[in-house]
Length: 116
Length: 110
Image (cartoon, rainbow over all chains, first blue to last red; front, side):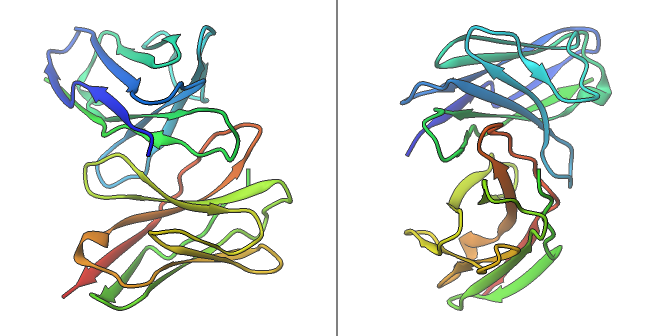
């Protein structure tokens, strides 16, 4: 099946710094990638949708200047958490869709961010 | 997008069939039913999806009622590794967005 990777798998950073998370589709071209956030014991919350070569579309309530998304190629999307604060500590998960129909998405393993 | 309703938790004995129900009474004709599961601290895993017909793959079977207002995911022989949170999601193909609800926490016990 399709494989999506994320890097890093976990990261600890200091408050005020920025962190970049990479999401790669390893064996297919992802026309669309999605970013989710998950707090402990809660469900996944969709943050934004990105299409290759265009600006990301953010869900209501998600700050686009804080969560910068770049989808420069059909196999790579990045999420940068700028000026991170402890409340940004969460599990960040990406998914990718090949857009071939059926709507299925393949998820990465997630990145656990801890801001101290 | 249509909303789904699932029981918060279920138990199942190892080796028995696990039947996970989902209500999606506001589903429209061009919306698919998708099932994903999430094992603790991992990304969600695709299980199966369907539009109106019943579907089966190597992981599970999906039974969709004739009026499409509800569905059941069946794991025919549950194992301890099937312990996870199972999400039923209704997807509008043109948006490709998955909106996760609270899911069903399935606990498989020996």
